[in-house]
Each structure stands twice: as structure tokens, then as C-alpha cells.
Amino acid sequence: MFLYQVCNGLNLSAGDNNFHGIYWFPNFYVYAQNRGLEWRKMCSRAYCKKMFDLFGVDSISALKECIAKCVYERDMGYRESFDAAPAITNFIKVEEIGSLN
Image (cartoon, rainbow, N blue to C red; front, side, top):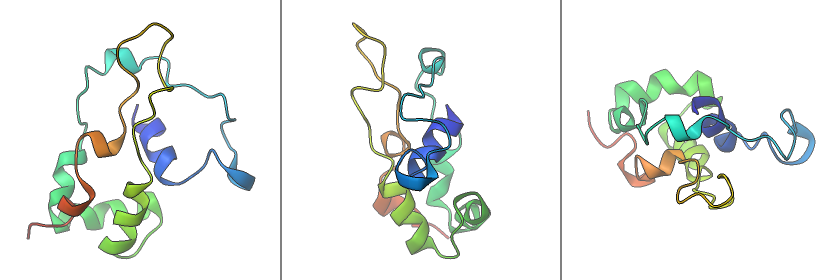
């Protein structure tokens, strides 16, 4: 689930960066039980700085740009399912990132 969510932020599914193929699917998303992993901690500026390397950025504003790309895709779910795989923005709003000291 984590890899799927980060992949969206890095745009690895588009263009020349197509590492996982356009049809890659997080098969076990139904078992994640909509847990936010560590995304809610990104309200903290200190925690955001730990995420810089993961997203290849060097500022909170650049991190926000990456996270803004992580949107919920209704089609990223099992056919006949009520829920799709959650995106990072399901757990934290972009404007909340780095909002706390």
C-alpha cells in the first residue's frame, strides 16, 4: 500500500518513468483497513524533513507538490468493490503538511 501511494506522488506510472506498468495494482489494499500508515505525521515539519529523501525533494513546498499528485482513483479497486485503494490525500490534506512545529 505504501509503495502504491508513494509511486503516485513520484509519477512513476506516467511517461518514461513507467517502472511498474500502467496495469500495476495494489492487490492487498483491502487488508490495509484504511489505515493512514504514517501520513498523518506529516503535519510535523520535522517529520516532513525525514520524507524529503523518499520523495526526492528539498523543501516542504516541493513535498506538498508531490503529495498533491496523490489523489484517490475510484478505478483503482476490485470490480464490484465499494472501496478503492486509498491515496495519501485520503489521510492528510495538502495544506496540513508541515503545518506544525
